[in-house]
Length: 70
Image (cartoon, rainbow, N blue to C red; front, top):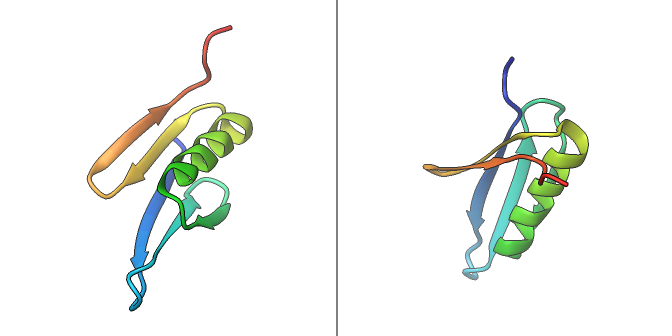
């Protein structure tokens, strides 16, 4: 089974503002945000509710995401 991977890409504009773009390798979902913490929360929400489990890949760091036990 191939794990679901969301890739986060950082873009820096000439005025030094940042944009984080999230893309899901499995289903093609994408979103963007200007807030770093919000970016991770949006990505986790998509993985848990759409795929159940997965990996968020941002640069060299990977974050494994799985549902919390009840």
